[in-house]
Image (cartoon, rainbow, N blue to C red; front, side):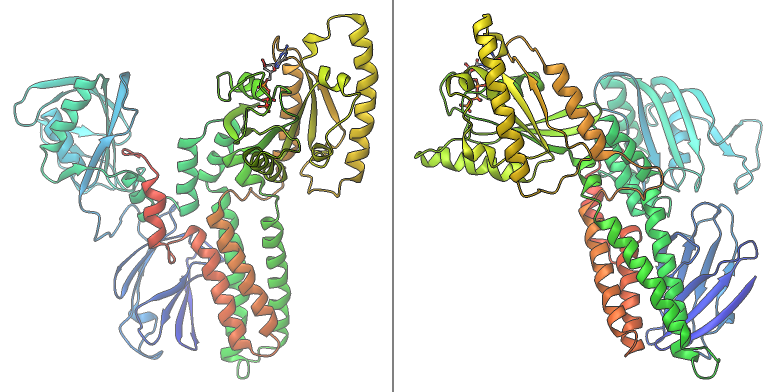
Length: 595
Ligand SMILES: Nc1nc2c(ncn2[C@@H]2O[C@H](COP(=O)(O)OP(=O)(O)OP(=O)(O)O)[C@@H](O)[C@H]2O)c(=O)[nH]1
């Protein structure tokens, strides 16, 4: 193991290198308080927990190497590496908190074949012993309990075992099922975890939960508490926690895909890499500030840092301008139905939603508000909205409805413009100018009530009118100042429809799916999509700090370097424990109990 010590302004910085890696892990202590980690981790992804004022634990999650640092002095001379204990540990965690053992039903609460109760914490083994009425001992390499007697049952972690379960006080048998024991830290939460696979009847679940409540030191888990412990124990970073929440909420297979990627660390990896690059650039700056003169560090290092930082900033900016695709994929693409009154807009939304979401009536101007339904089209989430018929009106409420329709169109990925083809024949193909204003290349044109064109005469008239209409549409789109188009597909698509007999519905759905595919297509080489406003805000702050850095780096390297640290903190807040206490409650309370 090699190490180096730098003294930076207010900080003592220690770089550690574990023999197997060429990269350094750094720990920076604030010199004035000499107790605060200001920065950490080139190589190590997760800060597990601050144990107390002067002792720190860093865990890289996968190989479980850790550092415990202890500072004793107040200046750089006394705060040297000798004051640090550092070691490589396998399977040992040094937590001082989280002593309580929690339990909850982790599967759904409805009657089912199998239900799973999860228990996490130091008393998990006691709970298992009391429920099975056996003396169980662990015998794995990392275990401290290895002596067995003839009455002991060896318990092998991660092995499913068939067993009876009993009430710990009355001794009554409650169920016969299976259990799996996970020895911390090799578990979801990082603690000792017990999973009880029992029959999913209400009485069995109720009685098993009651039995667990009788075990000393156990209490019911709060919503999201298992995941919170996993996070606090360095098993997941914040983006992975959010990915898990999204995975549990996923309604469509595309939402599932993106959530799974995030839960497996794709976004976390991206931000960790960017942060690492910033830390490296910052290290050059700091070295220049501290040792520029006596260590023969060329001013060129500042220029090199600058170039690196410009490249990183541009990368973040590009990531920020991905057209909200990630957010849309997570929350749903906005699709809006517009058209003249009575064209069949509400009939269409009801047909697509397969329920009576919006009122259908022959009275013109029935729909006033925006009526929304959530749909799954080809695996993509869609928020489809029915709107008021577009026409000039003196009615205040109807005008408000039209105004809402217009606003929604401007924020939509796709617009479905519905016409009544018979009404178009009668009006000699005249389209309301207000409606023409709202169409663009993201609009799909639907000519409804085609079932009413009963005879040849009507059909011929419709063919002529349709040509006329399409001309107007092409002209209107050409004149339309380009609304930001998210699609590569920009050829006008029109389709004849009947909401009465469902003609054309299949074609319409295929076309919407094609658009959505274009919109959400994920290029393998592309960075993972930005899925959350929280990430976006931190990235914007990071870019702002980097811009400030670039403004000052030629004139005041100290200010510049502080801006760089601020940028690092911003990007670190996306994945780490940095300034996120207030945020944790918000994230974890979205989880259900048992997760
Ligand atoms: N024959 C026929 N009638 C239809 C079709 N689609 C809708 N209608 C009828 O047309 C009338 C108006 O339908 P709505 O769906 O309420 O029309 P809308 O565009 O929502 O009307 P507004 O609320 O006024 O904007 C109703 O009587 C529907 O039953 C169709 O495909 N064929």
